[in-house]
Image (cartoon, rainbow, N blue to C red; front, side, top):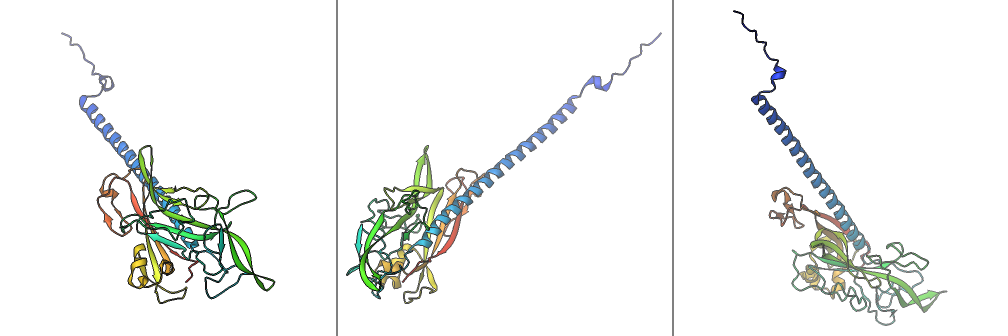
Length: 348
């Protein structure tokens, strides 16, 4: 009897076994999960990096604006061909800081001696459009301001085509912090012409800029920003740098017994303390107190535009006072940036 011969099937023809398919599927899933994890991690790191870069740019812009303006505070150089006098009320070397359309230095000079003032909080009348009656002298602070709310600062200086961005055209004029042309001030002062003193009209411009933290709602998203209100034209308050959550200012003051412009800073005070600290309170008026400020320490707290932190622990930050905030309000990144500015135009 002849047996039928059976030829073994080729392994390729038989296909994969169930175990091989399961192993292949598991390996594929592992590779896919690894690839997705790598992509998600890379995308998250990229968002964090982009957010930090944007925060750095916003902080640099905000600190740059504030530092430049504070350095200019009090700019009002002595003018040639003017009459000098030991009594500031009778001297016409410097232009009156600001005022109505007609000023005179005859008799008593009632123009401002303030070049800067600040608040622990906001100015009550920071947005006033009447800069004649609500100039830097008349600004007042919100009652009960604390060191935990955003601060405000106002600076005043003689503006020209070199320390501001001038308007275009043949009648180019200096501008305020928002690019609005400044009104021309006319003052009658004592000048010396051919060795003889006489009265003459002079013209100049003065910037009176106020900086503070405000909020704007766009598409139902509230964004804190560094705002400025200038005195140019019909100037209104406008945001300058977005995502600035707070502004904290400390003022480096010299000893009240010192009259030297190069005196060493004795310590740093909050705005309220500039007026109420024991030795400062003994001075005659606010102008003398603020004249003792030689440096300003600026801190801005900047946040990321969108929530990018993976969890609350990653969103923790250190605020301007150096305190760790371990319960952030959301998953945005936050960072405090600081700089110290020396007042170039400080005069006692």
